[in-house]
Amino acid sequence: MTMDWASFTPWQALAGGALIGLAAAMLIVLNGRIAGISGIVGGLLRPARHEIPWRLAMLAGLIGAPLLWQLWAPLPAAEVSASSVMLLAAGLLVGLGTRWAGGCTSGHGVCGLSRLSVRSLVATLSFMAAGFLTVYVVRHGLV
Image (cartoon, rainbow, N blue to C red; front, side):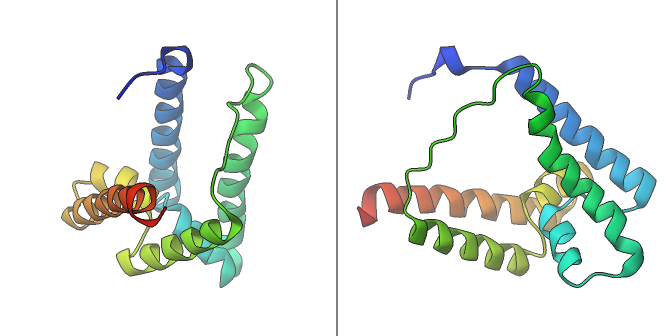
């Protein structure tokens, strides 16, 4: 494995991680809610009227943050090398996995682990193992 030092951005990564942690902490302290993106989006699919504003605000922040970042620095180039069918299958599997695990990587990995939840630790380890296995199979087994 080699490190692409030209693309290594520790200060931006640190700032991004700190902002994610701050947003998650603010949401739980000020609103009593976990910053799990699958739960936030899922709540918009079957909305309760009083839940809509904070969910939309959180999503607006997720979409608006990169747009705001572009005022200071260019966004990294995104390159997707998978087919549309593969992306659709991946999206469906991620959705199924988040329903099965009772949350996503942000809910379990960021918020659950910070609360020392054993359930979130098991879910996060399962997410990581499934991701490693999927990359291995796709890179070495299917193609």
